[in-house]
Image (cartoon, rainbow, N blue to C red; front, side, top):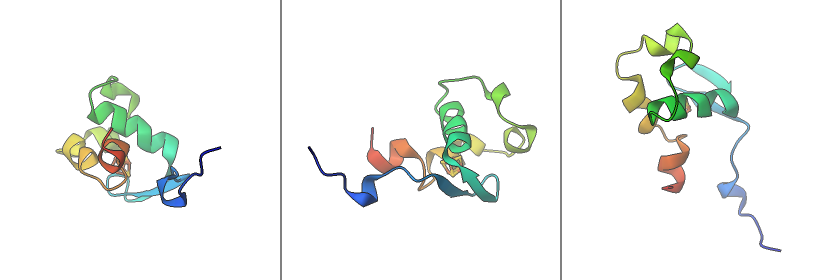
Length: 71
Ligand code: SF4
């Protein structure tokens, strides 16, 4: 069995610069999917959708899985 590097594990919670608080990884991935235009932005709360440039902030965030793992 292949060993998992602890630093490669996806965290349960992240500190989000958009929500300005700690959020669960599920909420984080919702924003990431919208930022990547994989799903409609209406799934997000207005407090996020109203932030100018929220997609760019999310795509460049250190917690963004595409950025972190270059997938
Ligand atoms: S990746 Fe996006 S949703 Fe997740 S913490 Fe960063 S800005 Fe917030």
